[in-house]
Length: 319
Image 1 (tube, rainbow, N blue to C red):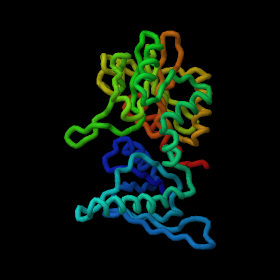
Image 2 (cartoon, one colour):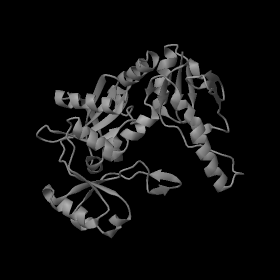
Image 3 (spheres, rainbow, N blue to C red):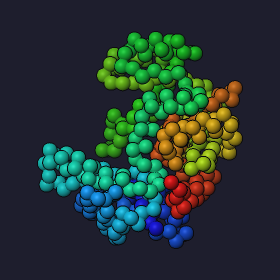
Image 4 (cartoon, rainbow, N blue to C red):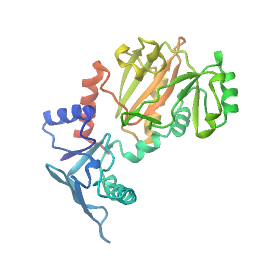
């Protein structure tokens, strides 16, 4: 058996799982798809009487036949990289061909955590929120629009006339020293909304006065909940902006929320997800984010149990 780990070279989260699998004596092949074709390689074949692709992955230090892969941990591969000698047009074509060709791996008939196609669907915010609501979870009032008038009317109708502005996608609109600069959640009022809203889609959400947040990490059938309390003004708006100020503690998840999360995982076909909830003074839980490939190692007391749970699923995969 071989556990295939698809991620970039610098991935401390994947390192934890790989170390645990190595400790158990499980064979691991770690490979960054972004290293194809300059370092990594693949050869795959299918014929008229075959039911699946046969072939192998060729890494810098080892090769693995497709039929030896018993599970896949899909984390955060880097983009494909090509030689500087290529023109921009040729590089775009090569990237498209590489993406399509390397897609042969997505046909591997084994359990994934998670299959990238399932991650892609669950990561689309409108789909995630609608599915969560359909599964019985409470989501904040949300408007997606490029109309400044509609956005102002939406915010005016909210309690205290304040909303949370959140990015819909994962990409950042700006860079600092060539690196993406995160776009944190911000508070907006009607007077903050101008005609720049017309330039693209924007998401405005009801501002939920939270007592604390919950990062609920789901691995298979297990749920690991951490209560997160903000220790700074920045982290009260978006805890990702100031991890150093956060304090963590265990948290009991209401059964209604657990039921909804189980349905959500089933709807998306996920084996792993990190979900963010806001909990108000009345104890109402509002789901604000579904992260099918979200981070989990930043919660100290859950780092080891989640590592072991993921390793369990990879070592003893079930269909």
